[in-house]
Structure formats: C-alpha cells, structure tokens
Length: 152
Image 1 (spheres, rainbow, N blue to C red):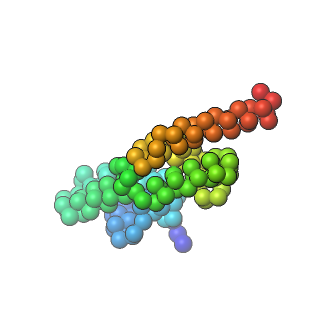
Image 2 (cartoon, helix red, strand yellow):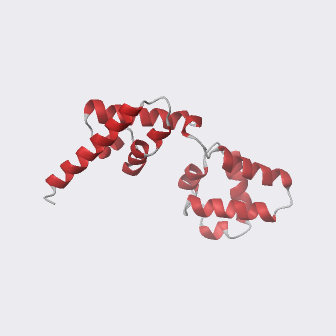
Image 3 (cartoon, rainbow, N blue to C red):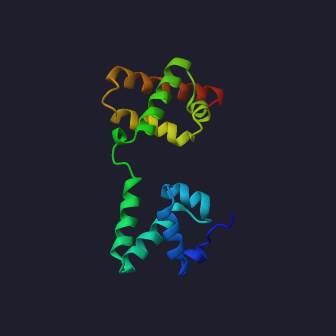
C-alpha cells in the first residue's frame, strides 16, 4: 500500500487525500498512521488549510465536522477511554501493576496510562475521592520503588 507523502499534501493531491480521509471511517490520527508518511498534526493543518481555500461549502463542513467529531471534549463522552481508565485503576490497585505493565496489558502507551491515572481519572464523577487518593498514593509508592531500584 502506497502512503501519501508530504509532497502529495503540498500539491493538488491534497484534494484526493481529503476525499479519502472523509470517505474513511478513521480518526485523523489513525488515517495518518495508516496512509501518510507524515504526522497527523501536519495532516490536520493541511486539511484545515484546504478547507479555507475551497469554495465547496459542503466539503468545508464535512472536514470541520469530521475533525470535531473524533475530538472528544469530555471523558464522559468517550466510553472506550472511560473503560480504559477504569481498567487501569483496577490493574494498579488490585494487581499492583506498574504504569508500564498496565500499558502492556491494555495495549497502550505509558504516557496514555499515566495520563489516565493522573488526569482523566479525576474527571470521572463516578469514581469516589478515596479511590482517586489511593491511585495517587500507589503511583507515589511505585515511584519511590523505582528510585530505590535504580540506586538514586
């Protein structure tokens, strides 16, 4: 499968890329990962740029809507993320796994899991304060343990 290059994005091929993106059922990040040899950030920039210069109001609206549709504003709006956060909490507290181990189990990245446990968790109203506090204490405990192992 041929990937789009940055030269494609800087030429009239951007129209083909735009139509392909709009026809796909993929998020911007997933589309860029699968079909582009440049980042999703660059792709977003190019799509927004073309939407400024096209007179096709329908295409402009489709681009804007699709980019906004995949961008969840609240964790409560994104069920998959919510499930991952709750699973990460369970793995941390019940199985005493580290952030790295949780990321491996959930097929995610360390930074995503760390953000889940330190930011996104605190946006969930259904998780009580005591559990949130316990998560922070466990993370702190793991951090101290890592320092001891590395002899710092």
